[in-house]
Length: 245
Image (tube, rainbow, N blue to C red; front, top):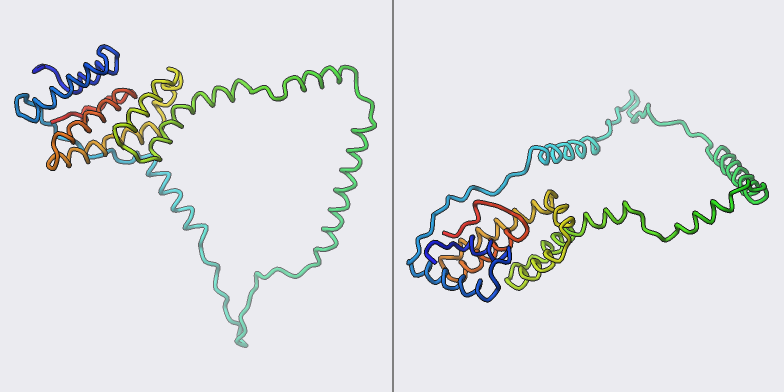
């Protein structure tokens, strides 16, 4: 047990090398030894949270600049020699009713002619076959739609978990069970996404909060930190900062 660490124990459990009962028993024994001072743990200097990338900062700056340019004030009116304001750019009033009516009538005529041609023009040979083939494909999902749904399954699971803001042990167990229920393709598709990066940052932030709470209840904080390490390992996050002291 002296050579064992909570991180290594979590990896063994995640890989299925030990069952749940033995994992919990070994974890409790190791945590008890840590809190009693019988096991030395390595102190880690945690770096600050990840800062926004240069690409995200550039996008934010561009959006702010475009918003400022879109709300630029209109030029002020300058008074004329007789004291009344001038507006040289004011458009001359024209009668737009007649052109609009002409366009509307023309559009109605064109649409009517198209409908007449479609209804009464003889169909070319083979059109019935084409219509039957088209009708047979109606309601069948396309391959690209299935692929998109597969790629979004892992990201949707992460988004739902983050939106609940529930970091209890039961919530973490539920998420890990749902994650293990995904296919390998669904898990791999979610790993390089921005939602996975948000999950990474959130786990690290929660880990720091539990670390700060160790001065109040060190045993409970250690268990919660170990659970966060287990979660990170289960979804493929390898962060050297997630280490118990």
